[in-house]
Amino acid sequence: MAHLFCGADLAMPMRKQTGFTLIELIVVMVVTGIIAANIVVFFKPAFDIYIAVGRRAQLTDIADTAMRRMSRDIHLAVPNSIRSPNAQCVELVPTSAGGRYRMQADTVWDGANPGAPSAWFDGTSAVSALDLLTPLSTTPAAGDWLVIDNQETNDVYAGTNRAAIQNVAAPPDASLGYSRIGLTAATQFPGGYSGGRFVVVSNAQKAVFYVCAGTGLDGAGSGTGTLYRFANYGFNAATPAACPVPVVAGPTPTPVLATKLKTCSFIYSPTQGETQQSGFVWMNLEIVDQGERIALVLGTHVDNVP
Image (tube, rainbow, N blue to C red; front, side, top):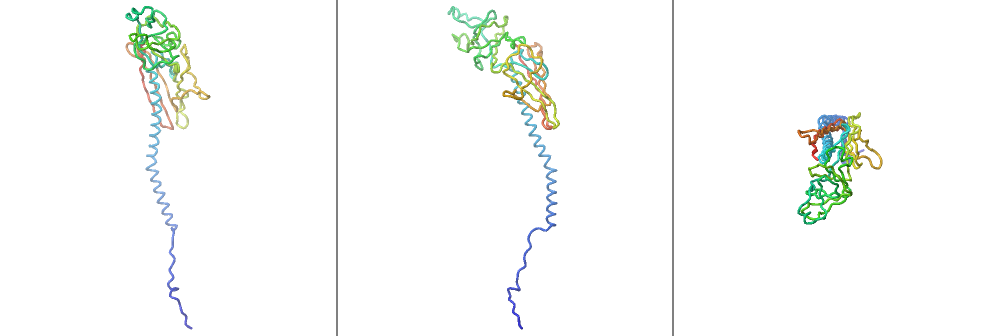
């Protein structure tokens, strides 16, 4: 018997295999591991350096900002107002304006206007107003303080040469000065002073205390200290025996100027210079964060000529 076969059945195509073999997968895994190891070896140090540089830049910015703020207050301090109970804190009275006042009568004005008010002060009597011979950089607000002749450190704190300002107005005549400061009460400022200079202290700030607290290093290699800036607490008549204690919680915590401090100190010398009319404040801040360290030391001169 004869059999017939279809040509199509004899030409059936073979199936093509797809995917990876186990050996190919192992080779890929080995090569990937080698590449990853090289990336870790060569690129991780560079990445760590990048993170460290960023952290140091941040620490430098914090320390620099704190130093600039303290230096500004020191430069603007009332002459001879800096007090330092110990190396962990320093107190001062920043000013907001200053200049010269009229110390003698205006012969032309007073001669032509007998009995008219003339606001001048020569140290012999109490005054309720003063004519200013220099323009004010910042106009005082009612309640701010006028300070004259602060030669003893505690005088401005005790108020023996300080008077509250009532208003600032134009004098009766332009020849008398730029402006006239009225006081809330007639005040006898220290006699015998021939400098004719005054400064203004903001009542919204008054005295200022910079305090370092809790300095040291924790187990993670970060500083534990904090730099605080006290303000608007008034005037302490006597030099404080110790640094004030910061308020870290509650509705009005003490403002923080810098954190993560390992060391922090202030050294004040009032006798720098041959004439002993200038002081010098030495400030030292060391901030540490997870082993990264930045230390700044800054010296600021103080004009102690009243």
